[in-house]
Every structure is written in C-alpha cells, then in structure tokens.
Image (tube, rainbow, N blue to C red; front, side, top):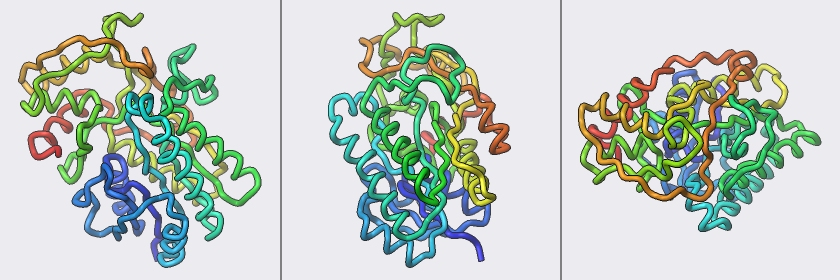
Length: 327
C-alpha cells in the first residue's frame, strides 16, 4: 500500500504542484487548506481535501490518525514580504505559531518525516554569491524571520525526538504546470513573473519596478527563478530521502544564477510578443538587493536534477497559464 502524506496548503501555488508530483510518484495525498489564498479547484481530484487550519492541533491529529499519515509536507503560510512588514503579527501567527502546533500534532501521532517550505529570505542580503546553506541568517522582514523561527523549532525538536526533517529554502518560484492543470492563482499576487504576465495579458495596467538604484548591473534587484515543477520534484526527492533514512537536512532550491527585474520584464515581452508598461517606484522595505543559490547540496544529497532550467520556459508556462485563466 502506498504511503499517505499530509500536504498543508495543498490548494496553493506550490502545494498544488507538489500534490501532482506526489500522486505521480505513487503517494496517496491528503490536503489540508483553509482556502484563505488557495483555490479548491487546484487540488487534484485524486487527493483527499479537508478545509481547515494547519494550526488546529485537534484537527491535524485526527487527520494523521484517520489516514495513517507517514509524512507531512508543510506549505501553509502567508508569503508577501511587504505585507509582513506592515502586519508582522499576522506572519508570526500564521507562519510560526501554526507551524509549532503542527509539529506538536506530528509528535503526538508519531509522524517522523517533515518537509518544510522555507525561503531564501532567511539570508537577507548575503555577503557572497552564490549563497550557501551555511551563510549568515539575517532576514530583512518578518516574513523571513517567521520562516527562520520555524526552521529553528524543527532543529530543536529533531534533536530530542524521532522527527527528521528537510528544510527547503526556495528562491523565486515561477512558472506553471506544463499541462495547464495548476498555476499561480493567488489573488493580488506580487510574484514578479506572474505580475508581468498579467500585464502582458492586459489584466494589469503595467509593471512597477520597486527601485532602480541598487548596486546591480542595471540598478534593479536580481533573483534566482526556479520553475515550480522542478521545485515540486525537489519535495518528492526530499520525502524519499527521509524515507530511506536520511538525516535532517537544509537545502537551497534554485538554479544558481540571477536575472534582474528589468531582464524579466524584457523576457516576458519577448516571449509573449506583447509590450509591457514599466514604471519605476521607490524601493520596498524588506527587499533583498541580489541573491542566487549555490545548489550543490540539493543536487548531490537529494540527487535532484532540474529539468526546466530555462527562463523562457518558465515565462512561457506562466504566460500560457495567464491566458488560460490565472485567477
């Protein structure tokens, strides 16, 4: 019988793609999502869906027991950096406190495998590029801090219990399922490629570049963009690693090179064949100047090889999703 896994936030962008990857890998999937930003229609039909909160200990314990869950993949979180600056307690409550409750439920029901959706925002502005997993951790906004606090809880819990974990630090996730089954559907999304593709489709008036006076080649922020399908496969690799007895691990999820905001806007224009109105606004508090991943650890330890490492492929899939629906 296939192992059954619980995916919190499985109706969201990355969670729904990972559900598809898990099902294709032979797992049975139970999704827990409160639908605050997720979409019920993005949950694959083969998965069991439960509407609820990942911080509800009683509910989570019941699900773990009822479905004989062997592992938890934890995506449920608030993820907008500027909003976290304005509403820090929302982020510490939703991201940190709920994660703490989820861990308690796992411990009480004997779940020993935990894959956590973290972020490159834990690094802040790195001293060196590409950034490695042992770089200094100094997040610039409550979003990154809320994720870092969860990382620390996992490390502390794993020292004294049987819970083993993989922490995946995402860089900038973009693109959509190549079969059009799911994509970025968060209301009022702030992801750069999503916003640029919406502008190309006429769903927005244009794209605002937040700061063009950074110490980068063209003055705009630089990011490492990873296709969401490759990221989903990284979660399957992390789960298999734990099932095979792997020790707790932290791994960067990125391709190892950066593109600037202006480069992305130009790529979207080229791929879509549509002009985009680009305005320059002030810098946003909490934005990192430039960051891209050293991904040797995930390649070597989890035997992960990206298949969609091409910015045109990423943008094309995102643009096609926007044309199809994108809401």
